[in-house]
Amino acid sequence: MMNSFTWAKDILSARNIKIHGEFEPVRLMPWSNVYRVKTQCGFIFLKVVTPPFDIELKLLPYLTEHFPEAVPYVIASSREYFSLLMQDAGTPLRPVMQKNYQLNLAIQTLKTYANIQQQLSHKIDLLLRLGVPDWRLNTLPSHFVSLLEKEAFLKNDGLSSSDITKLHALNNQIHTLCDRILSYAIPETIEHGDMHDNNILINSQNRLIIHDWGDTVLTHPFFSLCGFLHSAVKQHHIRQERAHLEQAYCNMWLQHETKEKLQSVLSLINQLREIKFVLSFSRIAECPGMHDLGEYKGTIANALKAFIQKMHQ
Image (cartoon, rainbow, N blue to C red):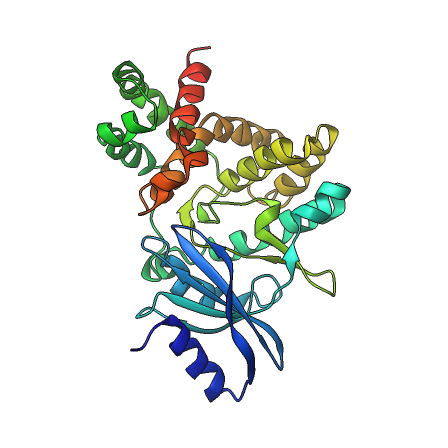
């Protein structure tokens, strides 16, 4: 019976790439499984995804074609088997940064990523055809209302009925924030959805590769910076580096707005950070098997409680 492993072996055989041994697991999670196999060309990685993370099956081959220096090289993709076959793109950047937070590597990552965002800001229709979800700011409040309607799901994660009522009452403020952000001239575009240094690879040539695009949506680009900064503070306890990272990323958008206005936009986006985060994480939380991963329970509830507190300050 044909499965992802058989499909991958057939692809490699057709490319005259000899494998040595069997595929071994690298990471097994409810939303995706990653395996690798040793070949004459080095390690080859097989990623098997679950809906709704099959976005990557069509998106990553497109990114490989247009940004080969910045994303993993896709050998083949199968929607039938929900699988991607990729060349080895390096090792995660996080362990490197944990030893010594290298600001230049973080800045290089943000500049490379912002360049991808800018080039794709003119290709919204194409990205929609590739299956990237539309979470642009004029749709974000309605996506959030849809999430709030899943009361049993939210209560199971730790929200009370009172919390949910308070969140509904904040909907007008969310609309207002979205409208204010849209009044600036920064184009909406592709947004990685999980931008942090564990999703950045560094290869033997010290080239930085952005991978794991399964959470990608179309929305405001600055959500990526907020997520990147939040992770860097949490994982590496950065302080003075934060301002340098903000400046480096914002400078990439100076053709659209002044420095002062870009800072204003970033401040507004930060107010919505938890909303965008819980919408992304809710897709993970609903994957079969997530109830077995107790470490993630309460993630959505805690973020939304923080949002309620922030909006009432």
